Image (cartoon, rainbow, N blue to C red; front, side, top):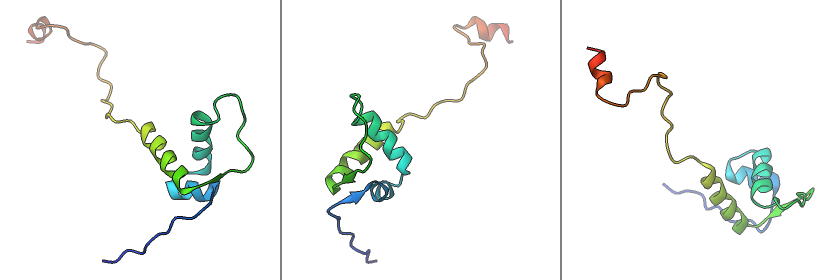
Length: 89
């Protein structure tokens, strides 16, 4: 099967970058605010990105993904030893 070859653009708008990363523009802005514009400086009104910027953004997005599956909450009663098993017999 032949896949169409995607060529990297020289410059991406925020909307194009978000689309390339499969996220919303709002999530892209939140990511930038947490990772890049976190020193008190505001995010510029318009942003442009290079293809190499998308690599870093994708890395940051992967860092945000939890690696572990959280177990469901069980009952509040937790046993600490064998006497729990003895009392349930």
